[in-house]
Image 1 (cartoon, rainbow, N blue to C red):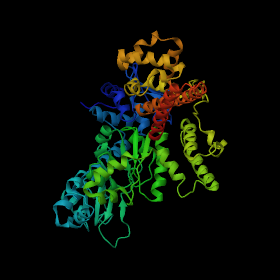
Image 2: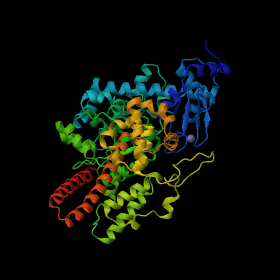
Image 3: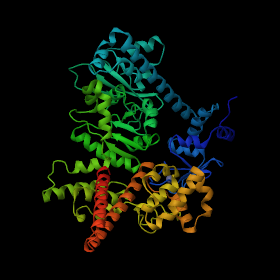
Length: 591
Ligand SMILES: [Zn+2]
């Protein structure tokens, strides 16, 4: 029985839909006690203040103070109205609705028709490419680019023949030409918009074609690529090319490889790099990063080797970090883009790729090198120029990262501090680690109080993600921590070994008050990067600091021993100092 769009319909849909599942398609949620927390999709933030209550089927954001139920969530996220949200959710819940408003129905029907038309077109072009003589030029082009049929079919590549092929096909199937025109497939006169081109469907993350990009097969054609116009089904800058095929591998490998062009991705998949995707036709947008963030926290950027490509990579690094994503940047050498690089490598592509990916520096390191590119850092003017570039670049990052980046840049360049110090202007961004920022609801959005040391940061991180203990405990011993962090570290480690992931929640009440306080605060406002790799990095830094201070202790002891002319003790201390110095150098080299 169809349900009318009265309150009954809302109630029925609501009873069949789980808010948590709906939200999870857009926000990565972590369960804490009975609630789920994540980064608010409706405002920019560094630490999760968006809470979903599964019992009440309600959500609330402590940052922007928006709140509501599953309908309001869908309304905001899909940029629709209440009825639109009902429509979407009813479809999902299998509840049939009666009586849509006429405009509503028209809009929803027209989008549906358009999507069906795009699907049909993709099938038609693919058929022409592989199963008709007319597809020959397309097959030749693919062969010249070393794309095998099996790989081409995964991407559903096709060929649009000259003339009115698709229009005739539609007429034969008694389908509407108007729909095809509206979807940007056909001109008014019925000629194919993509005629004499290889067509590549741009599909959403579920595999539905939304548009096409098409490459000419003619030598004399000036416009190598043309794209579908934007339509109600296709908004440029919201789609990630290849994501439907790559999503499983992205999850498996823990990162996505982000390239620029469609052919980069197609060739990459052919070479076994099946977590490759592309921003496709635009510079990377916030929407695209948000989409990727649903699947991973880390991007390996492989942009074109020219200056424009490297600058695009530099921008992408900043954009990703605004969404708390880690980046690394790989540079293809001796080729203009990843496509050319992989094709030139032939059967060695997989191996060469692994090498390239393994040595890819972090996005920040890459940016530092780019800032100094073409400059001679033994020349004072050049140093100043590089420092200015770096200073401007660092100022674009989220405030919480800037101090650390400035410090690293300083060490890397060996520049005296003032050259990298932030301009007053750079500091206007909110959320600096040591400045308490209090929102209008009175909740702090940044850790308040004393400076967060490396040890504290690690403790906060372990409080939020106890699983990181598995790796951290092999990296440091408690005596390497500062005295004030040692007790709580040992207590938390024991709790974890006894009670696993949920141990801390159960045993917290037995902790000394100030330790409880630290842990609760970490839960309420987790550090910016809650990530096991970051935990390991912190642990290594703590060990390194500890080794350095032991080293200087031994050197002090050594001069004492030399004065007392205890030659055996001197020899022992010398050996110890040497071994320690070697270990420190080794760690510094790796870190
Ligand atoms: Zn919010």
